[in-house]
Length: 381
View 1 (tube, rainbow, N blue to C red):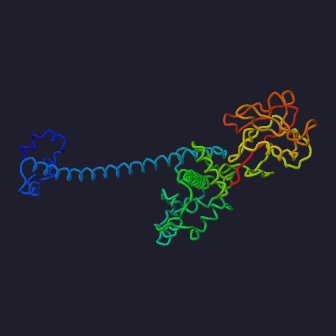
View 2 (cartoon, rainbow, N blue to C red):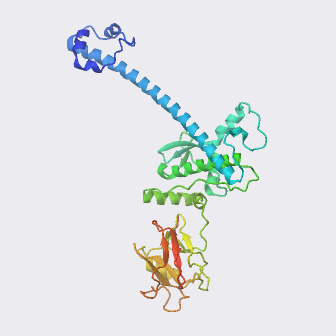
């Protein structure tokens, strides 16, 4: 039989288990029934070898995976240490003190070096485990996140919910159910964890009397899928962390029309009855979760009719005109025409804005005589 196998063209792909002492041919031949001979016996023998080779390959692959996982863990720790050193240099330079690059982490100007801590007790381990919350994200992913990370934004619904995890709905495995997809929820989790890490690091390495502000990481970038991005913003608004995550001030002076809230930039209350001109050369940013009102939006005529019943401290409310320029609509403070009517060519300035970003969210008003305010809106959750 071995002679038959040696003549088989596929044997050149079979590992040489015999030479390595991993497989004894006679032991394998004993597993082949004596009633089978010829090609059938060879096929049965090859099947036995294939099973053995498959098991050995799986074990070897698992070993490679474990070694790679260990290597990546060490690499991540090394990069984290380097990042901490660079961050410490930056923070101390901003604090106005020279930084000694030869000083090690334990020599940072923190007061006295604390003695080495003893191994954690059972109670401390149990306390750490209880601080980790296991989440079921939309029935598609299970993750583990610290309670501290999820409750950073004090006073928000996010903090309130996860401060009392025992009151939240759980699956059959005891994981807290999160009713958002991983594509929507995970960017928030990643931001929270990074924010917690950066703040803890800065508190540890910056002197308590320092005037250097605590820095936060850049907020999550808009998701590439517009539908998912809308869901992401709605989720942040639902949890009450939208302004906190993006470091923006809440929008004041809102008026609700239909299923949207409306306001103006620069902000002024709807009942401001004097036309002001502080917007000249004034730069504004449309907050995350808000968009500029467009003349192509559904129900625009009714919307502008309702909004121009108010004065807003200007004679003109400005909306984007389709995909092109911007258009002005009179308020009761306009000297000519009736409220809600559109300024015709020759009545409006050559341009309302000197600079507009590619995304249309950052604008600088032109230095013109006519008063105007940009209308923004946000969908009601």
